Image (cartoon, rainbow, N blue to C red):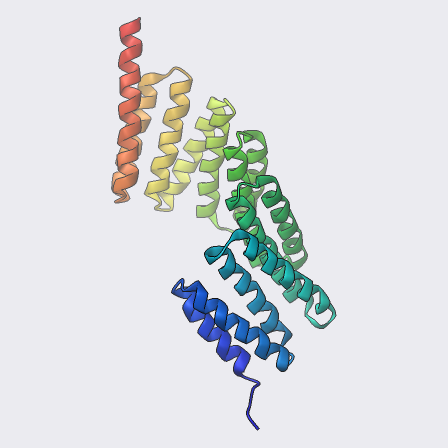
Length: 278
């Protein structure tokens, strides 16, 4: 008799190769074969995983609507198998489905639904509550904060960044924590709280220099410069922008350095204009 027990795993490996190559059409074809083979041998884990990956490929290559439909089908199948799947595997898979669906809605401009789905993903990660789940939630909260800033809702962004930063700190991931501090400083600028923005950005600079991330330290200095400019301290603002250029040059990031030079040039022109008008 032909051994079909290993076919689901073989098909998913083949599909993953095409997925890594971003050949979504072929990846979908092999994930569909994996689903069929998994059902034949009653391998529920591979069946669900293949359905989720198929949804991801559809969302990337066909349409958001097709991807959303596939994820909903995967979720329904997962619910049917719930009693025969380990709780952590169930929660982790459902979390992934919510994450992928959130990404679809975000890319479609449906921010409220995207954030609602991420809240659901966070809830399932809280049930798992291991290191990976907590770090994933920190990433979610960081993204949520960025979405709120895009919507000009800096106070809500700050609340999300606060949770993300504290989670990274508790996990001893101080680099990620310091990078989130930059996001908080930017939020304070958007909220018009410039002195607080300087305080947070300067703290982030110290951490980032200590950790060797000179590019993001340059961004911290740039944020402080922007805050000082809004406080009317133009010479200080230019000095901070100059420091930003130097830090980004040290990081060998020509794009970041060019951006810092551009910021400094704009501030210099504004400074000249203000002095001429006095």
